[in-house]
Length: 162
Ligand SMILES: CC(C)(COP(=O)(O)OP(=O)(O)OC[C@H]1O[C@@H](n2cnc3c(N)ncnc32)[C@H](O)[C@@H]1OP(=O)(O)O)[C@@H](O)C(=O)NCCC(=O)NCCS
Image 1 (cartoon, rainbow, N blue to C red):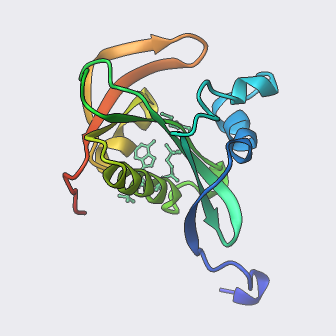
Image 2: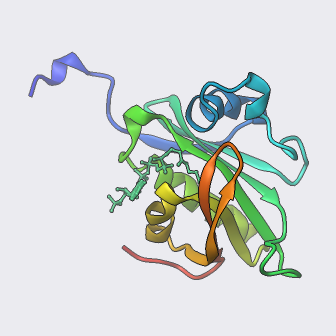
């Protein structure tokens, strides 16, 4: 292989906390394509309890995930964080950015004293979340303009090894 053609590409992945507005371009491109720019902003983006994570590959922001303090409807009374806005750029899929983001979210959840992490997973992403330790709760449901989803849950502190 001609490595001289891509000398700067090492595949180095780093996850950092980023401001809400840094998530909006990837959210729009991956999760709300063709929709108005405002659709990339979610309620609670600026709440003090919200955290946004960016995954950088060779210094370029190529993946995002956000955590919001929100109880899981199926598990009321348990301190919980909702994972939303999980997306990686199409050209880096399979490089491990999604996994690194979920792991950072789990670490943050553990440190913040949350008992569980949950999300409304697009049906096409269910296997991704399963691999990372989430389990389906309940039946498939529709979210208007987005499509079919399953609610998924991961208890914090239960480590999954691969
Ligand atoms: C789902 C998504 C975030 C996964 O990101 P990614 O960067 O490809 O994830 P990773 O490379 O870290 O993959 C981790 C593991 O999950 C697997 N995986 C990733 N996406 C998968 C999918 N859709 N179905 C099944 N397995 C998947 C990978 O093969 C990898 O497995 P391995 O460790 O055994 O090799 C990405 O495909 C995406 O942005 N999709 C479009 C938006 C979306 O659906 N977001 C989720 C909304 S709920």
